[in-house]
Image 1 (spheres, rainbow, N blue to C red):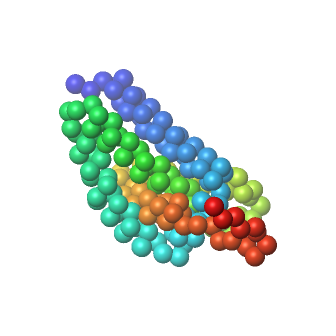
Image 2: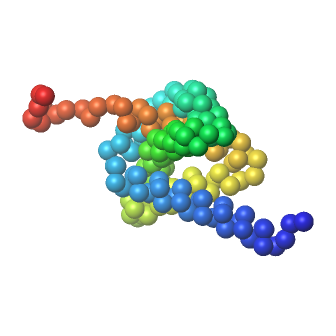
Length: 171
């Protein structure tokens, strides 16, 4: 039997997850702005390539990690959780790039909006869109996670372009 307390607990858990995802997207976009810009460029120029790269990563590395989580041995569980959390951390970088891209589009519609406000609102829209029943759960969330993982991995592995006046150090 489901009580009202169970319903409140589910709503509170969903609210906490959404608030945490929003805060993570904002923090990564603000702290690692160059990587967020690289992810934004990747998502803008090659969204389907990012999606399929992320899908391939989750289909291999993610499934291995989830299989290790299901293993009864504590070390295997720890390795599985580490694997999945690493993939979600990479996806956070890509999702911050998506939030930067949405913020720029939002500022073209409302130029009086500050960059921080546009970023906060666009990150909130991305997170809350995943709460839409059926469409959000099975279409928006997987697309955002896969595309963000692909864009995040490319943003983290690509080197920064060097300018002509920047000193070059050789080790």
